[in-house]
Image 1 (tube, one colour):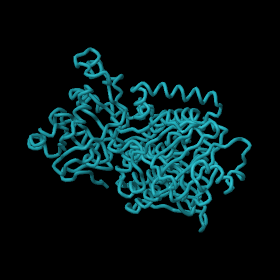
Image 2 (cartoon, rainbow, N blue to C red):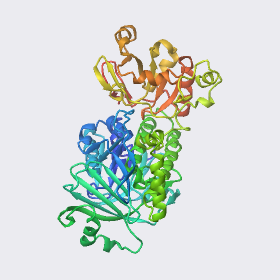
Image 3 (cartoon, rainbow, N blue to C red):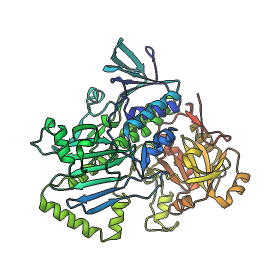
Image 4 (cartoon, helix red, strand yellow):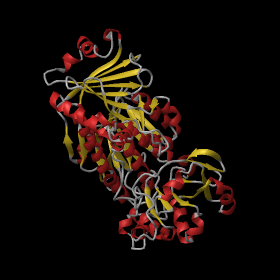
Length: 574
């Protein structure tokens, strides 16, 4: 390597994506420097919605307790028309990933919890007041050149990740496209303390006279958003008297409200053409801008950090080749675009101002609500596109040999049990039920198996159904060996199986139901909790080989984490 390297990863921007990425890399023992141009974290409210996927990542990072005190679980959304009639309810009850599907949250407080979490890691530092003005890159390293109160600072690293927002200088330096649209409509945001309404959820006011949003948030904060007309200037609409007039239909005495801020913003829906070039990558708003309607801006950035952290850790420890980082774009870009498209579509439904069109929309919604299946489709949030990877670090069942479980299912050697059965769960996120084990009862799955790779087998021991060569590869990968059995069989399994096999009791029956619907009793689980491979046990070695090829696995590399038999989670390996 030419020149000195101050750390392994430089992260530009101390927003949620950068802070979460730094936490996960710190957890994997990597050295990280975060460079933030501002003197401190942004302290005004921005994002208001936190989903179950993000909470699962927060759990992985060990920050559940400091974060959830700033959240409202089960944040219900009601779409109301101009007369105040509810025309759609979004109240998902599922907790398949271990957490409520939707949470209201106070972003500055949660971002602060992510920042304070970095104090746990000796190899992670945050430098405020450091604005990156240029970047130099060679074959072995990348150097961020920043200006600070003390002068110019040069930080060299193996990789740089730009997480500095929608105007990202990193993205611009990379020269990648940023395609999409910025609707011409502007919105006024008004945040107040001492919530004068007290309703704990969300109302989307599809009022053709002036569409609005009213959101109950933690810590007695209320947010209103009002759509503006083209002739209303920013100076005009942020005037206290003008804001009071807008709020008069919502509260008896707007002048007495404790206003936190009044701010005008425009929605953007854009996705970068690529998330990586050379030793530089982009994540969060630097890679994609989300309209606010689905509350997915903050969450999409957390998804980026979740996807990227383990890949960077694998490359930095020599466990995988540099090409693994290319899968960050191939896996995340498509889903980011899907979320942008859905958010833009939802926004068009809400901000209708033509009275005739609005009436037709309301009538259509009323008719659709007569059908329970349609009503539950919206209530359970099944319209939200879940990430499903078709390219990247996975063993694509469509590319496997004809004897795979998918082919056998098609030939009905394994019967299709339900109308909802899917041929393969590869590329989707694995559920997180509660399980029992020798270390405790009713524990969340991720807390038990640890934040690295795992092979999970239903009803069997991985050691009993895989050859020694495959077990050796899994040990080199640092994968936990996991057996899930009905709780009634756990005492037998704990006595019969090898000490290094983690036996989990399925006391809720949720894992049994999941495996019952899929002809894949063996699952290879990635550190980000996505299924890299799923197969019959006899197909395990071939599936594992395909996964290792997809990540350019190097058996001489070091696993950043390894689970020990004595530990309910995992321990860091230096």
